[in-house]
Length: 411
Image (cartoon, rainbow, N blue to C red; front, side):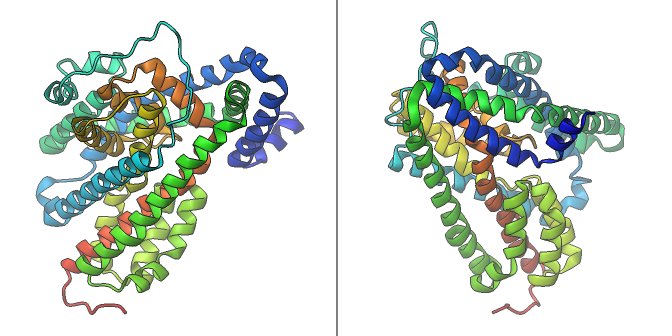
């Protein structure tokens, strides 16, 4: 490897992406619509990542459910943890949808797609929900039907869990496949600066700097939703369910919040979350050591808020008026997408078509939204990782203190 390449690789990826974003803005301003000649570079990078997302989701969801352990030993503690985390994610999605409806971040967007991409027909509520359950899971995987793949993966993982030792080869294969694909994704992410430069230049060349106004509304909505979810929803949960003073709780988790924000990874924050739970929150290690690792793979509050905002953003950008039935089906679909989101940068974006198709957004239209938002997604990812980690700690506080009622209330 040459000296220049070694120096380039030594720069943190997020800094390279940020530099590419700035360069893309300058290129888009200078070249205008002529910059579309290099748009294919960004689209090629997007296709590389999309190629890996669904196989990775299938592998990680199956291995994740199978890794929950013996259902008999999982017991009430695990059941309470899962139910609370899913409920929190559902509430977060509703917050995202409400903020998106109020702020209207996509209302003035003029997102263009190919002229031969007609709007998808929208079925009734029952048919929309039925479509989530695949008749042929292999066809769903080949057709890129994200929600159907997640449902199949959840069912297969549950079957592996219940079958026990006899199904261990399936769990081992799923885990190994997931790790191999994650390694491949790391290679693709090294091309992120080049892809981001092309995508940003194309977006600015076609829409001008006005595109930042809409994206800033999206970022404001995400920030407001995250603050509300952490301070109000999670704070009340800790106070009422965990019998702990919110002021004490928020002071105790500052370290985990900072690590989550800087690493954009719940998994990388896990050791810090465990230390915070033991030393700061004073949760019993015997219980928190079981609850927090489980929650790290399920807590998706930030993803839920983001997906809710993106759904309304896309609907507004393409002039789709959402009905109460549409909101209901979006909540159901977004819950599945959030819980099945793979550990890939911007995975929720690439899986978005599975949800948006439920309200008539075509795959080409979804691709246009992804191409518009993806260059800025790293910054948004830093924001939405924080409530995932704090949700895990909040639920761990409630569950472990409920099962250890002899502890006093920290003030």
